[in-house]
Amino acid sequence: MERLALHPRSYDKSGALQMAEVPLIAHRGGLSEAQFIVHHYDQPEVADQETLVVTSLDGTSRSIDIETIKSLPTREVTAVLECAGNGRGFLAQRAPGNQFGLGLFHQAKWRGVSVRDILRDDDISQQDWTTLVVQSSDEGVAMPENVHAQFGKGLVRSKALHPDTILAWQVNGQDLPRNHGAPVRLVVPGWYGIWWAKWVKSLALTDRPYKEFWQHERYTYQTADGTIIAPVTEHLPRAVIVAPESNDEVFDDTEVSILAWAGETPVAAVELTVDDGASWTSATVVEAAPTPFAWGRYRAAISTGLPRGRRRLAVRATDINGRTQSWQPAMNRLGYGNNGIHTIEIELLPSRPAEA
Image 1 (cartoon, rainbow, N blue to C red):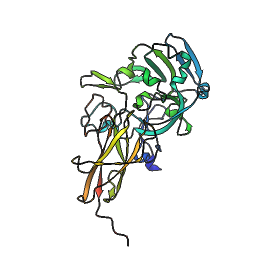
Image 2: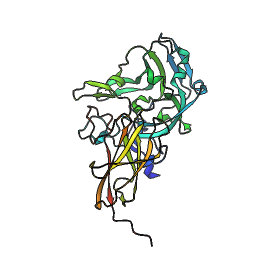
Image 3: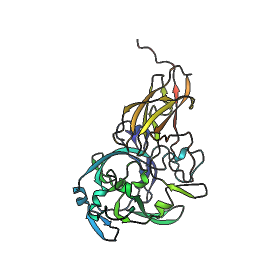
Image 4: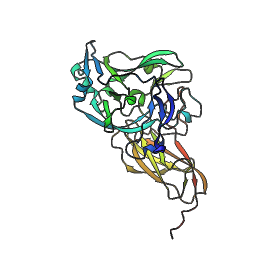
């Protein structure tokens, strides 16, 4: 189990993990055996019997206790949770922020209630609202900007009302752990983890753009001079090799195991190259994605007859809209959404000895 252990990056003032990556070996099944952690502030003190405040467009508020939320019709969704900073450390040009490897994603089965069911009492179909403001219990000073801000996000109406956008209190059949957002966290399938707010304490309808720090300054795609292009939302296509591992010694007939996903869009193709992109081999589906927001599992074989020794394996995913991966994605100032082609190096051994 040591190989499944989280790779810690930082701790908060209480000694709790604040950031930790997951090894790729944890993702060889349908659900991940470990889950990454990224907290922007110290983990807040939240009571188990917390209430949720819901505010209508007219300013009317009501409180709902967590047990009442759990009594509403439940919904389950299997989805990949991926941090927008995943892979930032592989960018050719260093971007500000933590230089993460590929340890900031995992797949899980989330159980909760559709946000739209919580909002039904607020006559959502009749109100001319455009944004759902989701506020969390965590707050602090964001550096290096030196800005004090509560964590919050403004979710567009269409995504807020999607039936698979849920407030979850369970993950993989177990109560949601405190360090993953209990008592309830937002699940926004197909979008990067910045939208999956933890320790949710309020929902509010508004007809105005939400321009607070975590919406308008951080987690936006920006040019080199800081001009905002767009908010970071949907996952970009990504394929990763989960077996073999980097530096493994392998034979020609070794199977390459691959995971691939593309946000809200189905994956159309997954490919493997052993010659730095001079040629690509199509991977075959081992297990189709169970939902539009989950990964599919694929396999491909290493070509026979290659020169022995050090070889580089690389994989890419392409979705049905033609979005694909490149060796080095277009740079954005804060290094979000780096879905560059995943590569590993292996040692290709002489042919496997014949059995006696």
